Each structure stands twice: as structure tokens, then as C-alpha cells.
Image: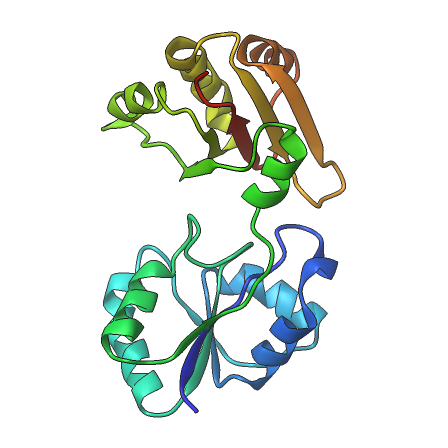
Length: 223
């Protein structure tokens, strides 16, 4: 039966993939992958030979209609990203919306998402939180930070290593140097690390130790 499966993949440790995810990836007619080279390593490791098709942020607007038509024709398709759950700071939203509009069944499997272990690991309040993903690079960044300075819930951000210190400096400026913060990198991987403290303390740490890997930043809300 035609169905779109949203399948989370490991964010680092390959053992974090579920048995159900492996079963679906083997059984579907097609796998949509953000980067077929990256996903190819995962599929090869688990001896999955299902055909892959490239589906990423630069071509998803052009490919959605074709994928929807294939689903209407009876194919079953799985969507995966390079790591984590599709549509969480990754492609997936446009295709999911198109399937809903065309009354195509969708099933999202539970699985790896980087911000969940980072939040739980932080020691900051997690009963209420807001996920911000990546902040705007230029346009709208200041406006967003001014708004978030009044946010009382715990905030979660994604950031790349070469922009980490710039973002932390902005947090010091808009949230205050003494705001509690937790920065996790390389989650589930060999060099996993979490640094906790005030914004100024974490800035000092990464000034002395160059940031490496992908980062999840958890910031306490305004009191």
C-alpha cells in the first residue's frame, strides 16, 4: 500500500537505529536521502540494497510533485535525512504537507533527534521548552534574539562549529553573561562532550578550546 514513511537515522552511533526502521528501509520501493553518499554508508553497513533518490533542501521544491505522483501510483517511500529525524532542521516538511494535501498516508517512526538528549543532559528545566533550531544567519537574527531575550522557557538551538562563538557572544549580549547554558557536541559519538555553566564561562571554554563537531545549545529561560 502506498505510504510515506519518515524514518529517523542515527545522529552518530549506528546502534541507535531501530529494528523497525531497518525493516521499513528494506521493504519500501524507494528511499529519499538528503545525501545519497552519506546515507549509502548507513545502508551498506546494514546490507540494505533499496534504491535511493536524492531529496534535499536545494531540490525538494522541484521533486515533491514527482514523489507525490509515485506515491499515488502505489509505491511506498521512506524519507531519511543525513542524521536524526526528517523535517527537524532538515528536509521533510514540504513533502509531508504535500502528502497530507493529497490524502496520502504518512507514518513517522520514533527515533534519534539530537536536541532531546542535549536537553535532558543539560540539567536545565525541561518541563517546558522551545526549539529554535538554527538562528537566522543575518536578516532577522537581531529581531529574533530581542524576542527570545524575554522567553521564560528553556531554549534549544543548533549551531555549527565555526559560528558557535559568534552565537554565544550574541547570547551574552542579549540574554546576559550570567544566563545558565549547556552546550553539547558530537552526541552519541566517541568524543561526545557537554559543557555547562554561565554564558561567559562557556565562551571562555571554547575560546581556549577550538569548537569541533556539531553543537546543540540549551539556554535557560528568563527568570
